[in-house]
Length: 439
Ligand SMILES: Nc1ncnc2c1ncn2[C@@H]1O[C@H](COP(=O)(O)OP(=O)(O)OP(=O)(O)O)[C@@H](O)[C@H]1O
Ligand SMILES: [Mg+2]
Image (cartoon, rainbow, N blue to C red; front, top):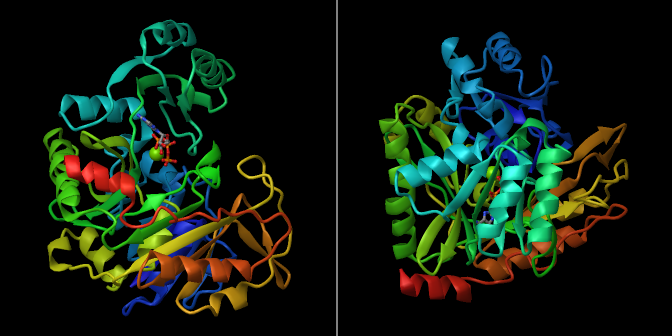
């Protein structure tokens, strides 16, 4: 099997790493990949064709030319731009939802209306507004805190949980007046703020059979103790017993299955990865958001525990044979710590040399996934905000976490920053225990 992997982050490195070890995989192309992916066996990085990852015709052309047997899409942009439809029209195999189905991520208004229409648990909607004036006016009738969301893709920066009307007004200005996210801010949603621990629950579906990955928890804020601005994700973990079995069953029965069934009934069967971002509230799990791809850094924590042939599973999913696959997971836990560049999540400082990568990778059960890195001569240098995802497994969260931090401590680059409290809430954490008692 020859596989094309689209993307260049830690998520894509983790997926390509697993695929490069899978029996039956002959060759992997990463478009465009990164310095870590370039080092994998049987793997080569190729430049993004055409005008960018939204240029779905150019991606299809490339897959056709390379004779790829399967294309795996990491980021949301190609999916929301219709890459699955383009590949299907040309008879090329790609794993991912259609353009219509990808609106579950591409339009927060689409997703919210879908959830409400089908009675799938989610925070209540105050309204969807296509002018700043209408959005300001609506603020006098909401409870605080109130959540404001840009409708379209905003790379994780289009959401604010606003404590006061002043904060809300300032954010609406940035989105709708300054148009910081362009057309993604043509509409905004105002919705109820939910409370509770968050959970990332990701499944793989071929439209008939749905297989869940191990549940994970992301850490969105830049600083320890969940302080500071939101980022793309500063770390993630997964562990046996992280959520009780009854809670997982409830997530499947009240959220995942109804969502997939309703997409089919609406005429847009969903195929690929479905990521449900959940709030575990005292009334049970509720949907914060959907993503139409795997998460980053959740993928790094998930892949580290995979004990099955990922290439076979992905191939089966594209051929509607997922029922033939059973996913086995390494028992215990995994932890991924993201090392970020100076000034991230603002404009990151780049170009600094990264030292200690081999020493980190030599730590037992640790693996270093690259994100914002590139090769400069012989050296690997920082080239983006999130630089590395230092990942380790272990018998429990404590063991996995100790190894991941031991490995991270061996890596250095100027201005490196990472959180010291990834997975520190333990398993199961107290908040999840209290939620499960009410479920
Ligand atoms: N209704 C809500 N109540 C409370 N917090 C919320 C709500 N909706 C979103 N949030 C917070 O904002 C974060 C980002 O929201 P959301 O996941 O919808 O945005 P996103 O930009 O699509 O994120 P991602 O980059 O993960 O795809 C959530 O992880 C959560 O912490
Ligand atoms: Mg999202």
